[in-house]
Length: 121
Image (cartoon, rainbow, N blue to C red):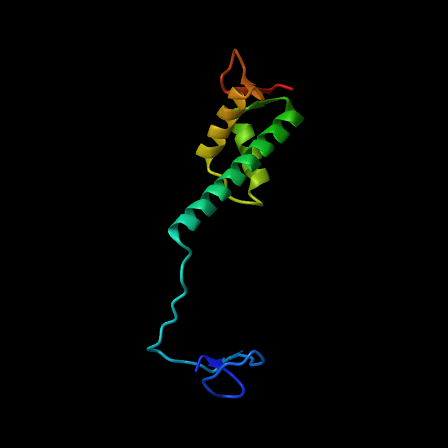
């Protein structure tokens, strides 16, 4: 038996307690753990993606606020370093977030060198 119930029997009362049988072994039995529904999984992934976008935005703005002017590669390295404690950010996503911050006028590209970003306060 996988679970032990003192006192043994088929009926279950509110006062009964169950204990995991640590000596249980059976090569033929498989225990199925149900996965969350697909819709719920999609919602969770969307929420995680949304939280990550906010975290990337915050890291980019924080870095640019401190440095004012920064080259693209330096900004990418700084943001990846800051976010590596929480998750491994994708370079493509960071680039998208930088473009979004440019469109929302938090950053701008340098007029002479498109590889340099300036912070707009």
